[in-house]
Length: 278
Image: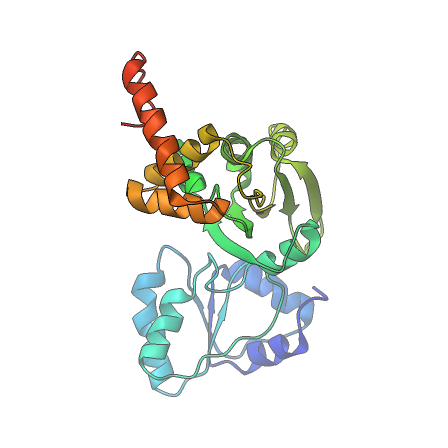
């Protein structure tokens, strides 16, 4: 509760409308902070966000001061809020934010991993095949990666990350950030997957080390072909995949092309197993 800035108390007390993801938790928050909300309180969550946004925009255009509060998360960042912000901006309505804790930046700061460059991927798909496909899109990403995940899917997600990124790739699982039971678990993805299999609870943020920089000329042909395949499975055309792999490895495109052709010829002469280059 001590992380709540004084400005939040002032905004809650002065708002004409408070749109809350969870009205019960809002009441507990205001009670703990000793705040009395004088404005109208509305529920605003994933299930009614689309339907309720026009009502809130109408209130805004009528001159009301609307405050959006989400539950244990930054509004709009994998939480309700994007639709309302976009609709308000379209109506030339002023939008601002009350600074507060953000799981993405807090997890990065506590992870012990490089933070000079990073990318936020939000929640991964729930289906195993789609999740693997998304991770394969990130396999050569050199920036530190940040994901959100539900606790009951964490072990499967970490196991998939270990499969795609490698069991030794460094990561940090950040649980219940800025809350009572905050916990940071650091280690290789394989180790973290084994830990998560025992059961984890709470709000989860996963930070994963970016792909290592390979010195020019040190990638063997099989690895070059694997990287091309990963990009093709993510939807890239082979020509673009070869160019991207060559640029990332710091080698001529011809070298990657020759490796792909050699692998393709080998695959043609081997028994079909449904995998490999065609």
